[in-house]
Length: 268
Image (cartoon, rainbow, N blue to C red; front, top):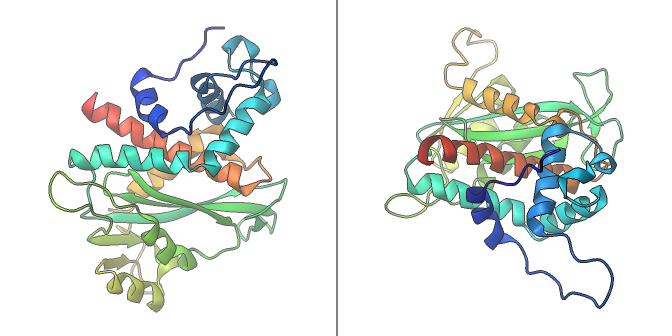
């Protein structure tokens, strides 16, 4: 089996964000190179295989070594910084459309339980989690968060809007507020509209019992497409991790990979 290396262009973005390697101990095994560990992490994210089944022929070490590296880099904030670096790269080229943003969520099963799981009202009360995604008008994920499946979408609106980082622009100051926010009827609450108004964001929220479903997805379809992209990462199709920080690390890394695809599509 050939070893799927991390692309050089992506590694050039990731490498400066990694914490320095600890001092080498006397004797013992040599430390697994960071690039090999990242290759193993990406392979598990995309294929969904268990850590212990990571093929040794790939040269990525054992699965637990890659798991520990994922955990340590999550604690060091590497994945958040990676996403911000890629968003800054897109923002400097005026590739992020702040004229509109879209917000939505999707529930996934969490059979093993753990933090940020709860009874899923759409799955007969089985334990599950929910991923919340906020995208720009092109479907680029600007913020992603994990909650229990029984957390109502409207409770996360303010947190999702505030979670968007300051993104560099071709000129002027960095920007983090879209001009408009599109959301479905789950966010049709006065507190949601007031929260957006306080942040100088024009709410575009479907009204329950007033607006029909026809045409409501004209601008919201991009976030539903992005949620489908997250589902293509097989490790995220079901929540396998009991630890919420590990699953959140996968979510943030998947968000960065989606942003990287936009970078490759437009600038490479």
